[in-house]
Length: 199
Length: 392
Image (tube, rainbow over all chains, first blue to last red; front, top):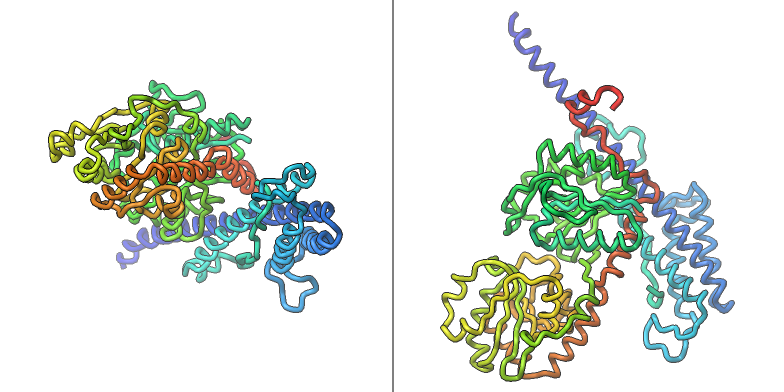
């Protein structure tokens, strides 16, 4: 039959378009996964920097206020530097999940910053009078790292949201384009900046 | 850091996005970074030394004003050349959804890309239609910045995901250290009001102020309205009585120093905008200059004025409410002084030293864990791949 011959170029063109679309979608998904990974690496780095700054502050505080902060910072550093900690944790796992450790550090920071010695003429967070320079520098760097943790987490979760939307597309699910790449997860943790740090 | 900034609008036309990019570029250069700005411009248009011209701009109506945009294969080639010459650590694209240079740059680049959304009005039909085509490019953006809470909400609604709010910057001390100009300084008999903005663009709201003028002059007959900006006012002034018309003084466009002096000298700065404003940079300029501000109660303005404590708000588009607010403030110098004092204190938040610090924090965050900015080889056209041969 001549019919098949007439339809053949059409089918070939269709296959070609489909093939192009699949390769294009795979590349898009791959790019998004890569973005999630970079954003996660950035967040991990910022969390480690925050924990280091918190440990430094702990060293400058009176023992009663400093010790709980030092412990929380040490736990966060340990979690941040070990590769295997999952973002959300698995029930019964050997290590507490990252979000719990980091939120605990945030709470410890809130409690500790209240205990930072301030001059009597305290008219605002910036007024440290003659307080020592080392403490001021530490409060500044802590403020920087807290802000950057917030940025990094927001950028990470934004990348996750876009990956998830892409992975939810029918063409991706039916063709299993996502392969074995694990589904990215939002990271939910308390990263509020304690009031009273220096800008 | 080596930073590439992309501005979709031509530098030879004044506009909020252009000024923002210019000031940011100059602040970053002053802080020791290497900055190159890609913007539409003819090759023979004079531009600052850090600007690379991307070709001629074509006027297009967009978002209620005429934008001058650039696209086409010629511009695409220039974008790619700029990217490879620049070897940037971070690429920062402004207004990434304008069908223009911004889209071309996003299309051609990979790596750490930051984008700033300026507009609070993405609801244009062209935008909606282009959405599915733009989305893959927008997915390349590693960090989104919105200039206001309103701009952020627009981003979240239309594109999903989130954005961090970093406001527009102002060089506060250029305004706070402005001189007082006797031509524009008010007296109890002749108080002065300032308006700043395009005269014939209805959303800037000059017509609201002019409709309020008879009521204001009913109480303060000597009131003078000083109008800074370009545009045609024939139709607007037509409806006024002879004596009201004489109270309006058209100053035309002024340079930055004169603008600062105007805002520093007048009794009140009036912002009667009727909508389409995402941030309200001129409010911050007036606050920096120490002018008490009267503004329409748009969401963006309310936030800059901290709910009315740093400036008086009136019902948007309502000349009677505007007149009543102006009359109340002209009669009460101590309330005016209080607004000015709180306003100039609040303006400090928008100083470039603070704002650029936040932008740099974003740059440094996206650079962690990512490569440098490079050319996206997947989106290179077949033609250019063939032309440059297998090595390219």
